[in-house]
Image (cartoon, rainbow, N blue to C red; front, top):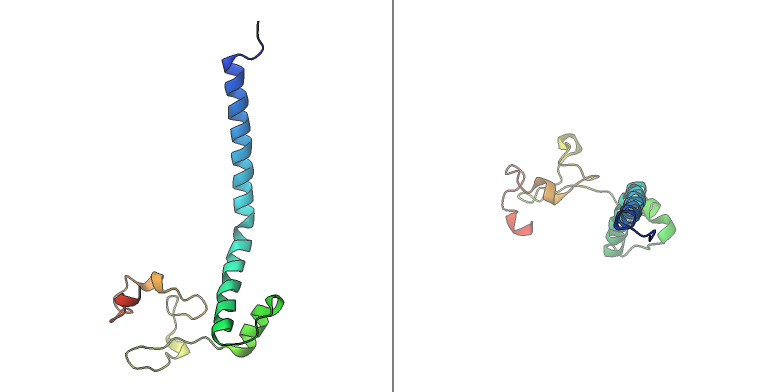
Length: 114
């Protein structure tokens, strides 16, 4: 009789699939923090490039902190929003236009930009 019964083949295939999916899941979870850090550095680098500032890959964070002051501007008046009016949504450090897209108090006339 053959040692390659359909049951054994299915067990080996399922075992290999389980091990591979486990390895992929572990890799994704372990690299998530690195991915977030790289996204942040990429955004900072793009801001430095737009400002025509030197973008040494090893010192992006330091160059940004030294040369750029993040602010939020009220588009209806053109004035800076004072820091005492910042909240969890209006915060230059974590600002995300998509996060406020459905909040009408922040979106006066801004729907065309989202």
